[in-house]
Length: 244
Image (cartoon, rainbow, N blue to C red):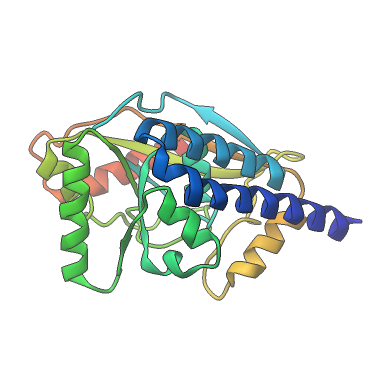
């Protein structure tokens, strides 16, 4: 029975994904930016509903940019969850672009891709991020640089935080958590770490008990003379406090 429910969720999610792909291919070229952003947010909420995941928001998402969102990173679901909460332009690892269907959807939503092992590519992405912030956009990053199990935070890297310093933009800490709705405990089902494959993580999420994706927004902060490493370390503390 559990496998049947999971298969039903998967079928619904595939229909939502294909509808999103068609929208990106045929409608996005004719729509203005505001309408595209609104559609990405509504589509993301539809996808969470198809997957059986409830969205819970705490705090105040940014009403407008410029704003750099700095969030912890747990799952392949994180980008979807944050889009559902508030449309933003993501910086994601380059391999996401190569994921079947997901990559095309992420690209259509305006994702910037980074080769994590290349310092030169990091500089390129920071430049593009700063330009986006100067245009008044909302940009989101995962300063841990990779996923964790959601129980503890990895160190925050400062490279991408440099974009906010260069653009004179604020950074808002964001904490992500996945909760088992039956017990209220943190769920590890959506995690995507270590030797996990994307397929295994997706199936574990589909077969898990009902989940909530909890997004907590902290107070935006300016650099106030901090360098990127110091600011990244203090943003990590802010995210940790939001998770408590």
